[in-house]
Structure formats: structure tokens, C-alpha cells
Length: 421
Image 1 (spheres, rainbow, N blue to C red):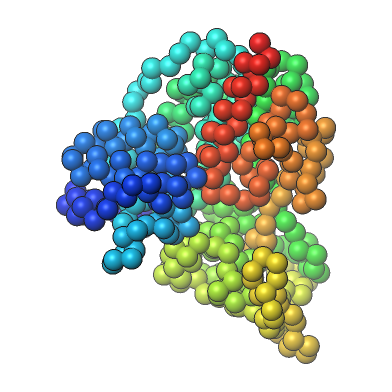
Image 2: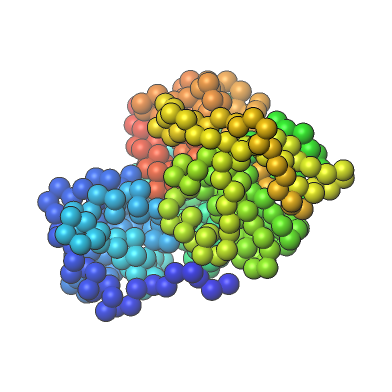
């Protein structure tokens, strides 16, 4: 499937690089969770040194090809670009992608001998692989445990229109072949056996369990969970969704699955059902715009009451809502309007209301009230020598935020292992 966005041409990239003000103490770099040296890599583009630009990116961030395509620039670097005060922000992410699309990663980086210790990493998503790279650069050997496809959510669930298979495979293959000693296709739910075998453990499994609605009709045929469908469609399997689909939720996963369902069948009606208004949607602006361009429609201010049907989904009963004052998160609260229920005719309902850490896994690790793994400032859990980061600690994150956690954890793990020796 053809990508929805094209790489900048050399002329476009040169013009855009000229717009950069090369700020001292650049706010764009400070805003990037991975602290990519933005002015420096743009200066390298300006001088025609694309391989130098790639080296700067690659030293700062292991998932540069991924973030060149799917990083939400409006939330990070471009949101604070000084150029915005003149005309508009520099297209930093697109310049980032221009570099990665026109250059290749090194076949092999020069690395020290892996003699400093052995670390087990549970989860091969952005946080886990970022941690593995940083540890290997420091001379530690890493074994990764991953039951699914390496690469995490981007590799398993993001549309090929935004993140093609060949890009994901190339980047993940480079990381696993260059920085990981062994990849074990095992599902681990207890880290205690690893503590006895390794010098340290890093848990970065993400959020493997999906939230459910406590409403009638969830057992009907035609009710799906969003990530279940995303993985099917990303793998090339037909989703099984019908011709009129309601996606319940307002986050990035809801918008992503709605877009992919439209991409799979452009004649299919896909309606995002959300209990608040358009301003309260939690998904990134760019993803909402892309979904709308694909033909996704919206039913705002609708609170799901029950899934209607006898054996198969026939509709979704909702109650009209109205918005009230803001809550502690800064979003408007919603309340139902009495007597305003109506049914949206549907043959498929997709639930996309959030993810969580699976219950019962990783005994011995303290949890927060929301069920996430608790860590201290040094990212160590309640079990000595066991660290955690990424979604499993913070809830759903972006790739670049997960990378930040992986890098920070590697630094702390290296200190811990050295101290133990």
C-alpha cells in the first residue's frame, strides 16, 4: 500500500533547512524526549552532509526511521520552534525523514567487547531495544525476551500507509543484529528466575491487556478489541469487520483502527463514537486529520449504554451527553442528558478505550493505583536489580518517550551492574 506522505525532495529539504534559525540552547532539542541535536543535523543537511546528519540522529536515537514517519511533531520539537514567531515552524520531522530515507545505517558499529555484565530485557519494543543498544555500547551483553514480533506497537499495529513493513523490518533488524546477543521467543510473566541468571533485568512489555466496557451486549458476535484488529490488519489478515463499524474511544488507538478499517475497505462506514467533543479527542491532530481525509466520521457527545442485537451486533445504544466544567486533567467533564437515548445502526463494534498491564503478571513488583509498575527516580522497581520503563510504567507513550525511558534505564542499569561487581 502506498505511503500517505512523500519524502521531501532535495530542493524542498534545502529550502526548509535554510529556514532554521540554529538557535543557541535550541528549544526544539530541549523539547525532544530523546534530545536529538536538531540544529546540528539540520546544519548538516544545509551543508550537504547527509551521512553526518544521520550519524547525529543515530547517536541520539535508535528508532530514527520510525520517528521520521510517526513521531507527533506537534507535541514535541515543532511545537516550540522559534521560527513559528515569524511564519511557521521548520518541518523538523520531515527533514529527519529526508535524512533517513536517503542514507543507510552502518552495517556494524564499532562496539566494545561485551564483558561488563549480562542483562535480560523483557519486551522488544522501542523502550526495550533502546535500552539494549545503550547497554551494548557500554559493554554489556543483552538477551531480549519477546513472544510477539520485535519492534513493539509500531511494528505490530501502525498502518502500512504511515509505517511500511520494509522500513520497520530494516530498522528492527539492524537493532537486534547489532546490539542484542539473543532474542528468545518466550512470554515471561515472572522476572524472579531472571534475577538469578542475569546481573540486571529491564521490564518493557508495554500494555498487553485492553480495557473493556461494562455494558450489556459485549458478548455478541461482531464485538472486537481495537488492538486485536490492528494486529490482524497489519499482518495482512482480513479484519472480519462488517460494512458499518462503530469505534468507541477518542485516543490514538481508536483513530488508528478507524483509519485502517477505512483503508482496508473504502466503502465501509466507520464512525468514531466519543463521549466528549472534538476538542477533547486525545488523539494527535495529524492522525485525526488523516482519518477524516480517509472518510472516517464522528458521533460526538455519545455515551455507550449497550450493544444491541440477539446473536450478532445490530447497533449501539447511546445517550446524548453535555459537557460541564473541566476536571483535574483539564478536559471538560460529561454528563448524560436524561431521555436522550438513541441507537446507531451498526454491524460491528470496536472497543478502543485504553490498555493496561495484564493482571497477575510480574509478582513481587509493586504497582501503582492504576496497576502500572512502580519505579523510583532511578527507574528501579521494588525488586533490587529489576528496572522498568515505557508504557508498563507510564501508560501509553509515544515511541520517542519510550526511547527516552530505555536510554535512561540503561544508564542506571550500567551503574548498578558496575557497583555490584
